[in-house]
Image (cartoon, rainbow, N blue to C red):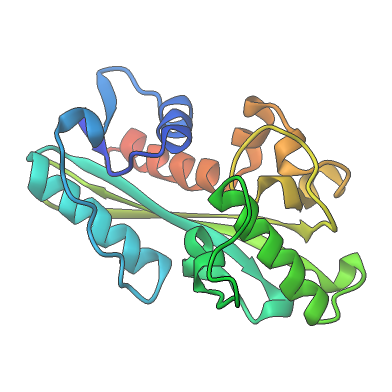
Length: 213
């Protein structure tokens, strides 16, 4: 695969992709390291549509093979929200103050998620089922598209736990560990072994190893 640009400037995401999709003769580099490119408008109506937008833009801007993912949290009690709006969930919420007094976007998103679940009357774990979903799009040197998907099932807790990870990780308790630890309480190795992004990347890697790319 040679040099591949990761269509993201999220250092956590680039790190995960390098850890999980490590292959001999393949170097994954961030989009930022290739130049100062504008971020494409993610106006797709699904995870796969938004991943495609990012991968295509990175491939066209750099001339390199590109890999992009679109991922998010799907909560059953909220009819699938925040879904494709996971990264900007809090910014979609109107407030009288017009701003959020949180130290980061992640904190604001997590706070809104907890509020919405409380409003929905989801007061026990059985009512707080959720899953992380990830779609990976790889655009090869010929411009051909390859797709892989991954899912991680779990429940949403009642408060943040753990300091590892990012995004909704402190609120998400994967079923793999019996809901006993949040995603933010897992080591990188433990998280990569069960995460939605890890599952999608491993599926893509299998395609590479089978020679189907």
